[in-house]
Length: 506
Image 1: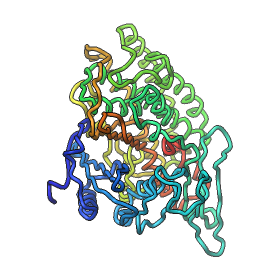
Image 2: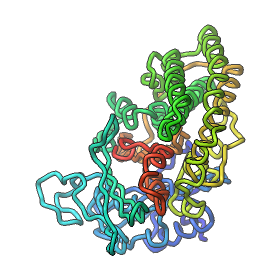
Image 3: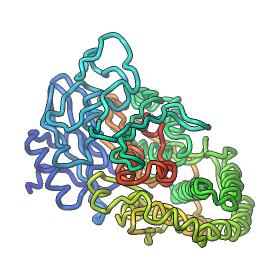
Image 4: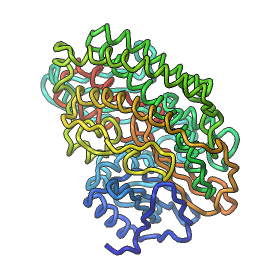
């Protein structure tokens, strides 16, 4: 491999665009495939329009080196699809087609992703009518033909309080042969709204990108803005953000285990975890006044400090909650009737997980060591994390057990950070963003890896902002988990992934 093809750099770095080589597409393609063959993975692939066409940027992670690889090329109306050789880019390429009207030639199933008009022209690659907004869900679905094969459609309107999404099953009897998932009903255009920033509304749009991951997304955004500004924040800021991230992880993991218990009718854990989730949310409210962490994390720091009295309050409440949480969870995981439903259901192999680019809980349940806290940290004040939670069976039990073990790890991590909370300021004044530069930020949210990429123009304003929520990678994993399963297993499998609709739709 020619080293001049790529730029390798660390998390939190800012790269001047002038130093980024633009490759011919064939070289871009070959280098990306070589990196993936050498165990790198694509964490982001996106476009940025220029007068001469569309600039494509690919960000790949080389986890065990704690290193990122950045590739750049330029295309016009079409380019040869990489999906047949690298399945993990299939959604990225569909997204490029929808946003910019460029066609990835040879893509095996080219469909819209979020059902919006092209960002650069009225016509699009699907020849939909000009001047009107595309109808969400209006597209072809995969069909299995054959005697006794039937189709079951679920959503986008669901029973209960749940976000909209459409699931179409191809079944033979009760066996699911194929599940196709169509989202995009909550598309808000967040990436477009962030252009021209940073502006005052930007942080509130980021907080709403995925409402249950407020701390995760605002941390990723803040790290990116700080990198583009060339600013370093204090170890105390890193530590408070790390504590808030683990509190967010605790609330959601406890809630998910309760929901899993409820799906199999194990009501003691379901009801008790519902109460415990509220207790953990209240700890975040103790920290910043919002149960979901809104208003805490900002570029340049945090808006609320941890004084000794608040540290004592959090420590005391966590000591009370730890045994209560362990008791409720172990009751579920010690029950033979629960284990009979969890074990072996909705299995995803490690090979499939790697091919699809799964991240976070879903990846670690398949034996893949993917955790931003382990591979990409800042120098000072970051949570010391060297023991990722890994399961290997890739089933509902494994995904639940990753959550169970991470709950106990989060208690330990928060306790360590509260004990050794470093001194320092909680706010840093940020200079202007570097002009014509590219920055990348990664953060391990409770579902998995969050990736934010920003490109600035000549005035140092955001010309392109790209967000990759872990759900963008992992919805394909849910579809794979249902193959060969009973259709009645769908609610349980769905809950074991518990992916974000709005985080995908953006």
